Length: 133
Image (cartoon, rainbow, N blue to C red; front, side, top):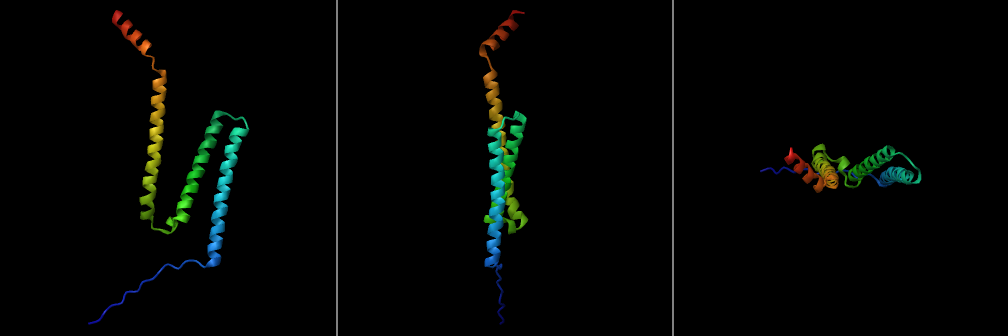
């Protein structure tokens, strides 16, 4: 009876110099994105600007923050080296969670606006006037 021997191989980790280069590259990328975010945030409060421009800058800051988050997940959690199905298993629920937050904020703002514009006295007057005709 023959026994088959299965070979187990492991992914080769990069050497010391390659690890240092990867750490320096990651630090520089995250630092540059953070400095851009901080600069945009400080510019919003230091200089007078139109509401539309402020909203645009806030949107860019959110996009840069998400970019930084995806980069951190890819590098520090090693998802950049994984297969696409595993990445989608993590990214799709995260995007749904972000969508839920946006939907709840939109709905909450709508409720707040409707609540602040509702005048019960005016509503009863309209109904009373409608009954008089």
